[in-house]
Image (cartoon, rainbow, N blue to C red; front, side):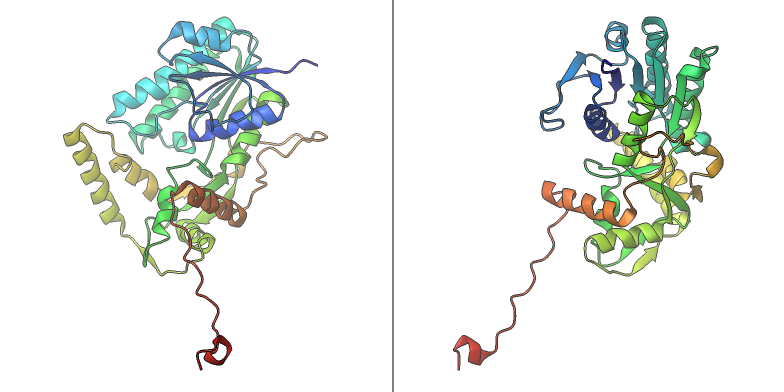
Length: 338
């Protein structure tokens, strides 16, 4: 049986880096769309077909999806100066890939990586744009719904991620801030990549699904981040009004500087939303097959995952190394000082 060809957008993003590796380990032929040549250290030893271009380039998209068995659209923008910029990337970009696939690879499966935030489009410009992207793709695949899967990952963490790095950095402070009292589903990026690979190569599962993980309060996540670094500092719950004010100020400062801030008023509203838990009625179902992992069943628990992530951050210099233990005590008589 010949290897399946999987075309991927967003390959050099956080999830994409792990997805490409997982696809390669499962024997897929991988074709990726990139604006510039990827860093060689991303995928050592992995053979890739690289298509130069962007989501705004119809010719490059046609080349990307041609004769593909599955197309995974994982590209997306997580920060932008305004709603229009978010929509250009997360709605129009997604629609362009879907349209190219329908035209040039009509038999291919299409997997769109969205976000759990898309279920609350009113909460932020980012969530609005991701929901709009889902709707645009569903319109394009009207009449061919059996070929379309939309996946809404929860909060992802793991090596290469800079979005959740701040949680681990905060855990090194003398007092650790906790920014929300809500609950969130969190999932190691390797488990997300495994589920997407399973969908791409083994089991077609049409519809809109979220990827389940483990559910925690932000206080529990902060405590786990401290534990992974051998620390135990007191927690300080930050009032919601202070978080909203900080988000508004960051948004204003970004506009004045002509930059898109990572933390914004919309991001503050997302963080304050009390329920980012993946519920059973929206979770990706599992069809048992011999020799395949359970889709949506995390293999990497929070304790293991955080420990491995901290080790990777430290190896990259993104987190400080742990303090060296003091030398063992030696009595002066033993050392010859008396």
